[in-house]
Length: 531
Image (tube, rainbow, N blue to C red; front, side):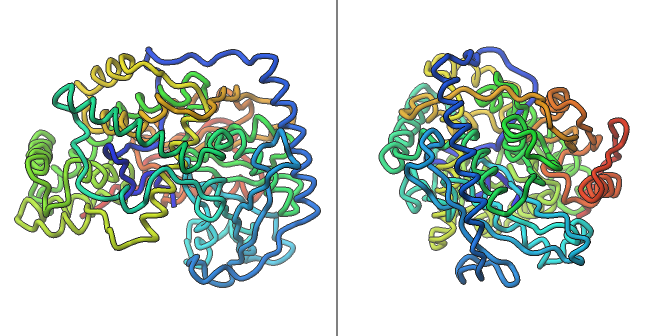
């Protein structure tokens, strides 16, 4: 799973964008300098991580067949790794993290250890990663010969001491209010919902919230490395998983063997996380227009107009219809954004989204209802969606300080919405609980090179909406000796699993041999989808 915002994940106040980054927009919170107390706490946590890793190395993982209801077929195996809730108290309360693996497909001599994966979020589960082997994902066939594929549920996610902020069934009920406010009363209503959601997080998961940070998840990752019996970590991170990897590389540079980061969050402390979401809105608008251009060029298939302006007019007409009366009684503007945002996220969604849109304009309302409406009968899916959203909120709100003044939020998002309306307000409401967050809010780590850090391979498309290109450039500067592979004039989020030999061969070479090009590389885009 690469998608960090599945379509069913709707906050009670609207739909959401993704995770995030790009050039900075002024007007938020600067990262404070570390105090003596925070340095002392960090030292205690660093020592706690050493203790937890040593303990995990001794315990290992008791691998067994996965529980039947986890959907992970043999020969995938599952197990648990124990980590402290608070690394400053490594002998205190522990939680169990779910992990799974599939052994390398090559010979014992070909094996190079475990490749651990994080798909993003925060809030995404990596437990499906071993299925890239069982489902014969050709792009990963050569790497699978050398590595065990290992996935895990990060703290708070899925099977790993899951947290919650709302009743799952209430969370997904439709319809939601239009994320784009018409009046001050609309904004007041959304602010009330955001406060209620933050309060729900505190009431349902308060004991965990202060420890739901990227720093702690990076420490968890090192404990998992130790439990796997690996002296050094091989890591693949996508989207938010790139920020997790950047923090891990900063905290544990000597524990890394190889790391690929794909679709990169800008790791600057000033960007995490308020500015990141603002900057994301700009990038989403650009990629949305790319999709509209493609739809217009393929009007023979979709009949939505031969120009971008014509396609946009159909979109605005659809939004107005849904706002006046939810389509099928269940699809309002928020549900529309949650469904349509997958098009600027992933090229693989271009055809499905355009097809549904075209059918609706041709008179098939049910196709849109089937695609965009939440499924209230999917109890397990709704629990997973609510949990994923809770983790997203908890990590972003806990990682750093957020603006507490509504005036700041209103000013910045009103300004952006004028030119970038597709995601701006939906993204604002998604993150507004952080303005009234009651849990502890930390200071992001300064991501940079420390002694022992190996060469890191960075992969990024130039038109990525969820994690814009400047984030990859920034991480490249911070991690000395890294190499940047740029997929030019492409914008799908998550590049390494797409078919593009220029990228696939370099990723394989790096993971299998450790070799990288002597300089950065620019690749032509992967194939454009065809109707």
